[in-house]
Length: 265
Image (cartoon, rainbow, N blue to C red; front, side, top):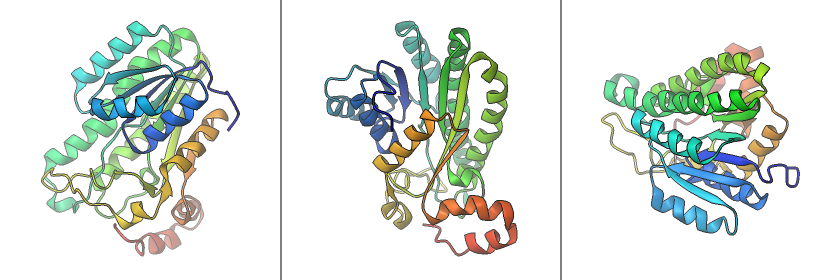
């Protein structure tokens, strides 16, 4: 990661109260960026802000599952900051339930947060970036945004949808100097599995072994920033699971056999 590449840049990070978003905040604070941190849990954002030391940090509450909250947060941020250089659209929720057992309200909830809230924020901030003729939107998808997986039907579908949306948006805004990157993390040591929704919408409150043994959130955040510096279209990060992208493309039958051997948790 280049030293001071993000210095003085205005950067908005959603999902900044934990995991990858939190680690992005720390790395960017050290580079001297001006940060806007958002999530539902403002008390956790205060903790992250304190850990950012002397960096300039603004906290803005945001619930991606509620359209009004997204609209209000964007209004507040765009009124205070004439320019937004980077939007790390990182917030989201996961799932751990069988497709046929999952109430449709859970599927809708996952899409409201992972897709509709996500794209609404990008539309609002993207318009400002088009006007200023520069900017970069970084969207956290997942490796399961490229293939389906056990217990994650709605989560995987919501991530697949992000790819179609942002690949289209990229072609529209690149002429205006706006870049878009999709991030595809594999297993990462975050609380995503603990906060995942079960079939009835209840939180699992348990950590998957895959997440527990995954890459650290700090390592993933560093890889993301390196990819952002290069304006990569897709930034895939993982261990053996990341190889699935190559195997699926060139040997789809082998991939189908391989992915079925992976543990669902």
